[in-house]
Length: 426
Ligand SMILES: [Zn+2]
Image (cartoon, rainbow, N blue to C red; front, side, top):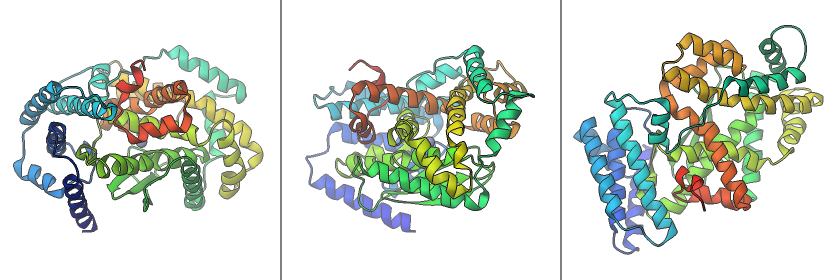
């Protein structure tokens, strides 16, 4: 109910904003059509609309209209052509807005075709949905990272078992999880606020859930509010507290969504940002800023120091092991690319699920249970996985090349930039 009242208020606000602004432009009209199409597609796939806080009657309208997938596809192709015919505005933000609509519409078309049974390779799907394909990595890349871990944790028996036994020592005890996660969130928020002015009243709630194919999720509700869910199916390593707090909270998804709502939806009246379609180029920026945001908030050794000095004692862990644990975590991070690699091979039919499971246990160095969770994610979200590592790499290199640190990062959180803007020469 509260959500309805809020949505109605937002509609009034959008209308009020609109009345104090110049007349609606063709892009405003096209943006509204795009939102309606994105919502219509959401009726065919429950994961597609990750967040929507625009006028509730638009959603009600698509529910009663029940547009077929082929009709959505046709309308998206037509709308793409219409937007393409509009002149490229001289103003950079408006040009980015026009480009945003085009690229997001390409994702709407692609998703509607996939739902109608079209078959694409992993890379074709990545390119059409997210605007970029992930570079392939040979097994040798992972072998190298495994050898470095071998040196860090020598001993008898398989490396996987040694690493797992070592990692187990750093699991957060269940009764300490909430205290540790809240401390991590508080620190991530404080570090973000030193560089970013967040909208007044922004807030979040934390929920602990089970039986999900992901480890954490941010559900943005509009009105600067998020629900952050943490999956407790598997034990959480102390290193995941900062990962999740920055990624889902600050300066990641919660901050990103709140800033988009403030700067683009409320200040400019750009309705297209009231809907967030999951399988779209915007996810590359969302996941990329979510993951690179960890390094922005904790540059250099600051993360290790905070974990060792604050989170380890809170979790009842031995701070003396902090530095080695940090090195092992850093080396393990390279293995993160294994998720993309295994998803590509598995979805392209080059591996069965059993083979993928064994490959992931070996090269991703994860337990059988965690490998199974990752493959459940692949079954459900397919090539989405590239957004985490490739998104982080693209955002990192763009921010670092700019030499503007937090300012460049903030630009990504407050503008309609998509991966194409990160990869094109500036
Ligand atoms: Zn995320």
